[in-house]
Image 1: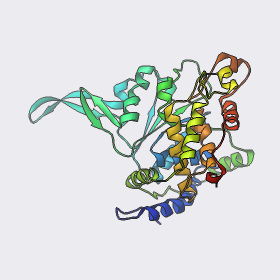
Image 2 (image 1 turned 90 degrees about the vertical axis):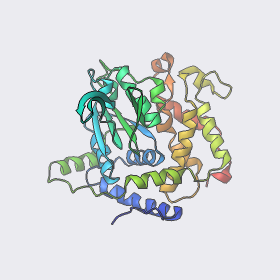
Image 3 (image 1 turned 120 degrees about the vertical axis):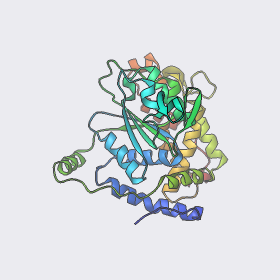
Image 4 (image 1 turned 60 degrees about the vertical axis):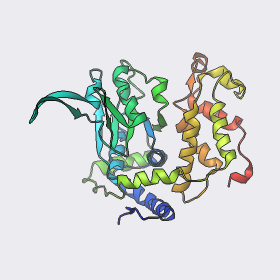
Length: 340
């Protein structure tokens, strides 16, 4: 069964196909991935919203397998780039080389691995800032500039970067300007015992069933357009903006604990991604409207990489997720009329 849409498919039909396809997506992923429902939902939301993701998790938690499987389901060209200390920007974007042609010797651009639909930037914090910055133009403008010539990247285009939270020696933390370009920071944790038993059982038995492609890149682009047409109440937009603004220290809207623990808060993109993500979440659940819960459920992946704790917070054992929880408790929600 295929959920591929045609150019004549109406928006209502597309919504129904995506809603019906969600169960199929989970069914295909269950062939190789056990559990991690929240992680899968957040990655799908970012995919349908057109955003990039930073994935944080210990080794062996199937980060690469999950991303590759999602690319197969959506029939997207997948490229994995292993970030190392000696990786150069041209190794990612491509470079100009001298080639013999029918018209003589000419400089020709040879595309790098970034020219794909879904890029897995594996252990992105293990390469120097100069190489990390090679992704900035690609992530923001969906293009690469070489020798003054702009080369458009294929659409849709997503960067999913992984970070290992251990073995931090010799790593290069991403600057805030680059972190802000990621829609979500998705945290993959260890599985419950029953799920871990199932993983060991599956991976020590026969080969898993092949992943079936359910969508195409054109379907994803069509969904990007549809998401932006989803209506949202003005009060909910204001709530998302206030939630992001409350994380900024030394501002009038900042609670006392923000001034005490945070050195830098979320910027404008946080509010944009909260609203976009909430629209996608509503559609995936078959709703034509956004609720407060949609925004609150996405506050953690949206804000956790945009809030920089100070030394006092670290000394007191305060975590970013703990601060976000207090923000959700402190910021007044929208009127009850738009919660349902």
